[in-house]
Image 1 (tube, one colour):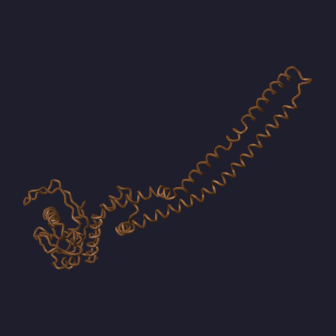
Image 2 (spheres, rainbow, N blue to C red; image 1 turned 120 degrees about the horizontal axis):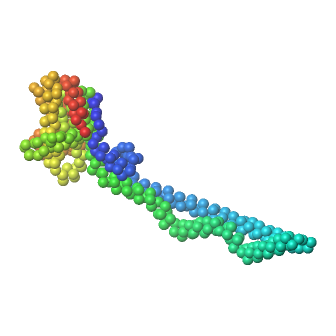
Length: 354
């Protein structure tokens, strides 16, 4: 089986974007596609869940309101009984207060006590109802709050459901919007995964490097187009005994195939191929002369793989293939390197990757 290195680049891009948006619960492309397919059902499920939640809240409020009403009445009775008991005790103590056969000091003390007791009795009687309300005010506030909520749910049940589910629905919509923006990248990842899956069936003297990137300092000058190449990125590099296959994958629909041009990916792969040719046939040859690469050069073949179908147009130095044609095309070329030499080329490319 082919030696596979790195995950496909589009998948890395998707994961990076999702993590930037604090979305961490999707583990595969299939999960993203399932999310998109089931978006409408997910909306309905959220609405259903929050309808049930509001119904449960309403039922709970009914119980709590009834309990609070009973508790308030019971508490009111207990407080009234306590205040009445305190009043009766004060009145009895006042009635029992005697001034005969007392010293002057005791007389003055009893006098002031009498004044205090009368004042206390007067305050308790005057503020009786206010004192009762003070002790049960917290429960009355809770009852008022629960009653208002219950009345609102009863009168505006649909609005209560919408408010309850609004944050969850907004998050669902946010995720849908971000994932929809990634549609082209998702399609690209599907295509790249299919290419990698197709090539993994090759023998173990093949090495597939997914998402190959390389930066050049100083830049490589391409005289034909008069441009300086500072970096390259290629979907797949297949290192084989027959040389190197640079592969760009396009998962285009029939409509896209008719509307889009292959000119840009063709120019991209030609540009990347030239840069790779320069480093392989200089750096590698110079550092690995013992393998006699300087006498043979390293063949580089440029491929654009279209997953489903391909156009009729052809391009110089770039072969256009469908996914079904890919493996047979690669296997067609005769080997020019030993397995050890192929492995060394792959090792070099992995060393400069990234």
